[in-house]
Length: 193
Image (cartoon, rainbow, N blue to C red; front, side):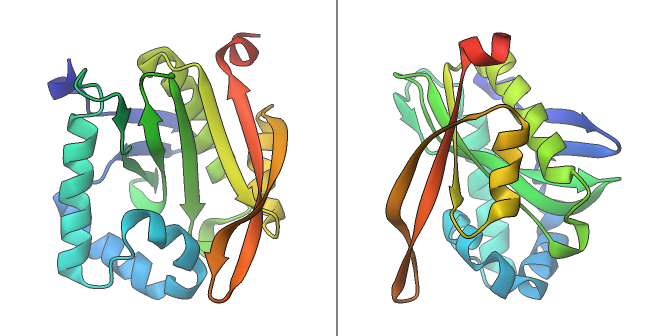
């Protein structure tokens, strides 16, 4: 089953979520370099690639992680990222920040470049991935953490009906400072309602 796992998810309004391909290297490298300061916190999740070769390696590793995502050999899987495409153009990234198969839970992370913010792209993408997660992966719990100084990001789980579960004190390091995160969760039973 894992060998044919290659998600392509329609999120509506010209938005698709799909695995990064090797021919996305130039576009993703350009997006990262043009928006490096803005994306600093999110790039740590994918290894903060700074060269074309590092972006290419990220894509290859990500493809392998996706291919292995449903393998029964994993009690806990590192997760993988999907490109958010608007009319075919890569405008962001969304993905699983680890999949814990034993406990049937995952955490989602996402970003979209500033030029495409405020259009509902992240909310639609997150909604589509939540539905996919419960239908295809059959998980029980999805978490989203949002930095307390990022109200736009917090609006996504709130609009989708996630429950605010906690404020996690100083969990993200930014330079010499630490930022707290709001923890949101959705359980399968909440989604089914």
